Amino acid sequence: MDRDELIFQEYRMYAEQKENFIDRNFRTNRFYMVSFIAIIFAMIYTGNVVFMSKISATLIFSLLGVFICALWWMNVDSYNTLIKIKFANVLEVLEERLPVKPFTDEFKGIEEFRNKNVFMFSDIQKIIAIFGALFFFAVFISELSPLIVRIFEKIISLLGAVKGGI
Image (cartoon, rainbow, N blue to C red):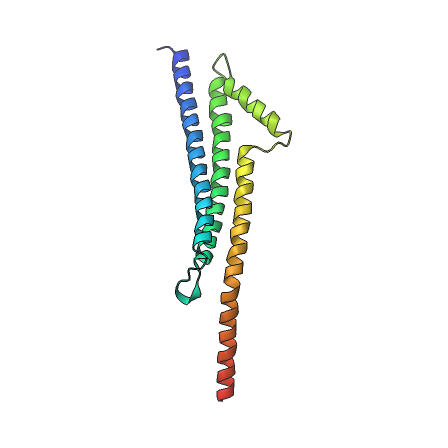
């Protein structure tokens, strides 16, 4: 195997790994989307369930939803960064030794497209994650507020009993 063939084989193997990485990214995003929807359905179907100390299932699921959305956003961001590194730092460098540069051309096309301020799929995923986190956070606060009010009322009544007993 000559040097050019070896470079091409390394290039092909790395390109396949990059595609597998992108496929894994899509599977991961599918997991987060299904989790997001499952949490919403869980909140709907367990809305009246109350655990110890009057903590509702909705409170727990909304907090879980905030965490899932935060993880989803971080995951989308990290995958985007890693994919860009794979393009710019590895494939483009390998392509310098090849007669054709498909990934370099593709990356330039994506950058030109992105400069037109068009939303990419990853941008949409991040927006869904942000709005989801805000939604779950609002539900969490609305479920937590009555608990805080009850605790505050108990503290006031205890202070009144202590003050009145003296």
